[in-house]
Length: 282
Image (cartoon, rainbow, N blue to C red; front, side, top):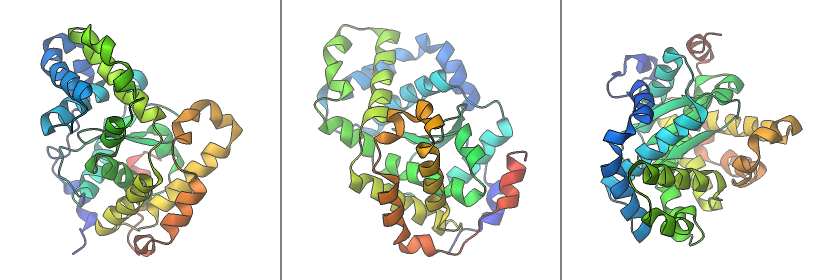
């Protein structure tokens, strides 16, 4: 039975907590917590064996801290909570359970990103470009599938030219907080520069739209967001912001064609324009 998304805002805040206030504190006080995180991250980076759940969480946490340090988070607690609630509702239909955490990056870039361990980010620019909640649900669903299926991890472990491999010798000589930053930098370089396979992107599109539809949203939300991305990326004024970031994905035309043919795209669920507008203070 489809989830009653009219009750979305009744989702427990504890189950949807991203720890946004705490993550900023962690950036400024990592000396106390860095060593156990980096020991596990170093082991994972150097062996290229599948990450254990503990390693996945440690690497994701360190990378998320770095992401927040680079872009910052929007100073809008209500918006952060709203995105967490939408994301947590969609993530109930993911193929793998993770302690999902969602945050809004304070940047004009229109995009969304998945880090290991269930850390999902969407940008302020994306929210500005959207017109309804189903688009947000679809965009978050796409990233949820990337994390659930460990797409970035598989790319990192399969590419000998990965930033992890090239930094391995340097990593051995680093200690403590320096090592934590090195691994976080490596994850983000791979995130922004790794070209995920067409099959992985198609899978994330299919499953993201499916999750949103099963949650009760219109299945066309993700397709609409991909069309927004296509328009934004084609604008010469935005090339300065996008750069390599979106060129690592298959072409938007290919993704639009593929997703348009999926059954979930025809799902007649809710779009919730009014609630989306209220949540964003429009």
